[in-house]
Length: 183
Image 1: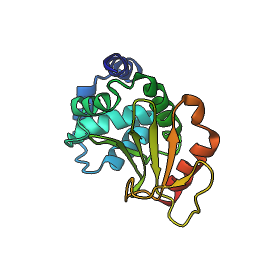
Image 2: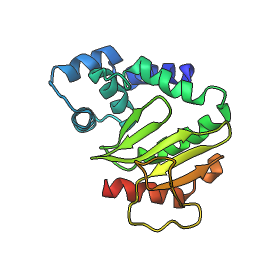
Image 3: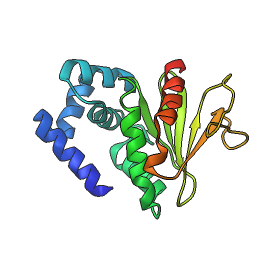
C-alpha cells in the first residue's frame, strides 16, 4: 500500500508538474470548504482525474479521517492481514470512480464510506476473505446476491458479499450506480 501511495504521489508530480504540497496551496487559495467543490475545481479547471482530485481534496481539507497520512493508515489498517482483498477493493474503487465527479471517498476506521449528496454505499473488509458492500437502495426488493442488510449496518438497506475480483460483476456495479444516482 505504501508503494501505491508513493506511485500516486510521483504520478501526480509527473502528470501535473506540481507536487501535492503545491496543489494544496493552489486549492487553499480558492477558500473552498467542501470536498465536492475542490473535486469539481480540479477536474474542470485543471483536467484532473478523480483519483488525483480526491487525493488533493483530502489533503487540502485535512479532515481527520481523510488527511493523506491518516487516510493511508485507515485503509492500510483495514486490509492488514487481508492482502488477497486489496485487488478486490481496487477494482471496486476503479469502477465507482467512473460514476461521476461528485463521488466522495471517506475512509473510516472499519470501512470506506462512499457519498454523493448522502452516503450511497460503504466497502468493508469484514473477514480475511470477504468484503461486504453496504448499499443504500431503500425500496428495492432484495434479490439473489443483493441481500437485505438486516442489522449489519443501519445506514444501508442492502448487502452484497464479495470474495474475489471476479465477484465484482456488472450486476454489482449496477446496484452501486443505482444507489449513487439516487443519492
